[in-house]
Image 1 (cartoon, rainbow, N blue to C red):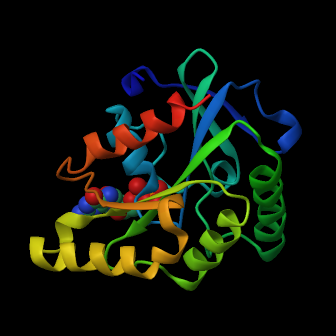
Image 2: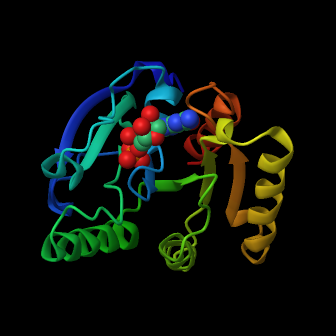
Length: 196
Ligand code: GDP
C-alpha cells in the first residue's frame, strides 16, 4: 500500500454513515499518546490527522483512503477529560458497535506512550477486542523519550504482559519525532491489508 497517497474522505458520527470499504485498519489510543502524529508519520503527510484537540472533531471516525476502497480509520482518543460524560458514553457505544460489527476491520493499531504503557483502559480495551479475535498491533510511541536500553526493556515487558494473547497481538517501538519504526509499522499494516 502507498500510505502517502492517503486522502481524508469522511468523518462518520455513527455506524450507519461508514463508507463502503473493502478493508480497513483502525487506530486507537489514549488521548495525547501520539496517535495523530503516528498517522501523519506513517502516511508522511503532515497534518493529515489533526494533532490539535478539537473535541467536536475527535468524536468521529475519520476515514483516510489509501487505495480504492481501502482505509485507515482514526478513532477518537479515549479518556479525553474535556468531553462530557454523556459524550464519552455515546462514543463508547459507537466504538463497541464498530468493533463488534465492522467486518472490514482487519486489525487495530493501539498507540501507547512508552512512558505509560498498558493503562487500565488500554488493558480493558485489549481484552475486549481480543474477544472478537481482531488482531492488534501496539506502537510504543515517543520511544525517543527513553534511551535504547530502557526502551527495549519496556518493549520486552509489554510483550511479556500480553504473551497470553499469542500472535493476536504484536508490539514494536515507534517514534514520530525520530521517524523510528515506520517500516515495521507499514509491514504490519500491509500484512493485514493483504489478507482477503
Ligand atoms: P493524540 O492525542 O494521540 O493524537 O496525540 P498527538 O499526536 O497530538 O501527540 C500528543 C503530543 O505528543 C504532541 O505534543 C506531540 O508533538 C507529541 N508527540 C507525538 N509523538 C511523539 C514522538 O514520537 N516523540 C515525541 N517526543 N513527542 C511526540
